[in-house]
Image (cartoon, rainbow, N blue to C red; front, side, top):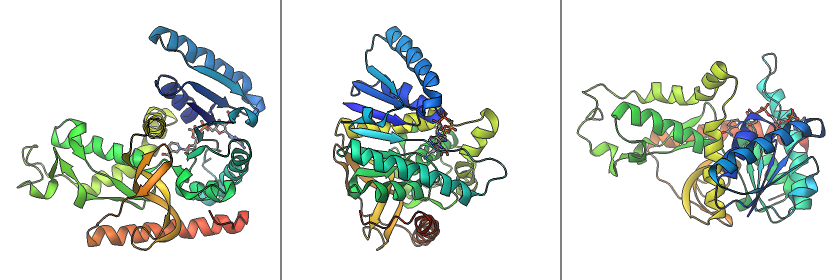
Length: 325
Ligand code: NAP
């Protein structure tokens, strides 16, 4: 199984490379860098080889600035993009990154037409749409990381609050990877028991109430908070990427939340990429799960769709990429 990472010199790309190199299901890893960063990526691969030797693992790692080397990849992880500078508007960032994503997606389609594209670059819901249109791939083959990471963060906060193991929390965040993310509280359970069946949400906590609104604010700001403290998010996105990639490579049929192109499957929403629960496996998205939401959740999801669609239309108009998936 071959996985390629474009943007592998970046903090997310290289952390993902390290994580994926350890996975049994990955035999070949291709790390793509810009020509001026080739030396950096070579150093990264040598360091990873040393770590793998210590673990007794072997994977072939190719470093390159030639996109031809991604040929035959099962999955291409796309994390190239410019970071936002303080003087840059979000939309300016989106346009710059959209051009990078569109360019790479066209090349992926040329060189490795059977691969699955996993988009990481922000704003990820819009970038996923750009990658889908620019590659011309089918909608099940292009999706983005966003709400899977948000859901993991939400699980973490809940596990801490309720003093239970993180694996006992089943919850999901859908919608936008951004301020319009929607926690699916109506589908949340602890230890398999729906949260509404607990006599009090604060059952485990000595009656300290769980503040959903505050927790969601924390999830929304989790990335900026980490960036503010250490300069970048690395391990969280890297393990989330590894989860998604190995689910595909091992055809695991896990239900994960990824940014996917909607064609009316949920609330009739069409022509936008949003975080939704999907069944994932070797063909990519095998199906979008029809979900039932409370009225509040539905309203917030519709709002997320409206906002992301507006942003996407603005970017697409700019790029003028209007082909159907
Ligand atoms: P980073 O450390 O700044 O790395 C950016 C990468 O993009 C580097 O490999 C860089 O290559 C490359 N790059 C920069 N400008 C480029 C250009 N004009 N053309 C081609 N490649 C270019 O950023 P990061 O922390 O890894 O984050 C990468 C992206 O992922 C960002 O958009 C970030 O917001 C996003 N992200 C998304 C999630 C999510 O959940 N979806 C989570 C975390 C981060 P050089 O080394 O040659 O400069």
